[in-house]
Length: 42
Image (cartoon, rainbow, N blue to C red; front, side, top):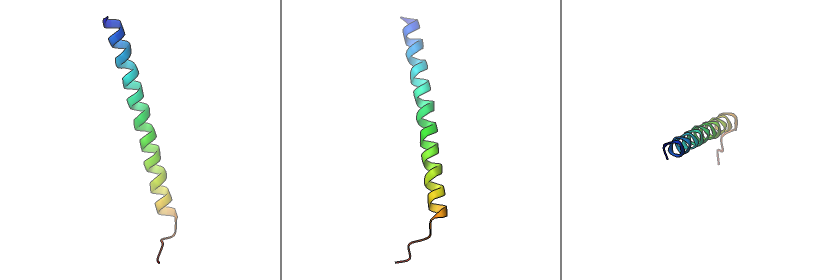
């Protein structure tokens, strides 16, 4: 039982780290997009 919980906690931990990395990459890409596009002055 304890081994299953430990494996589950590990999987959840890895999923959280991967989700954080993906969010950081998306935020970085959005920031670069905003910084490198010309402003819309309509």
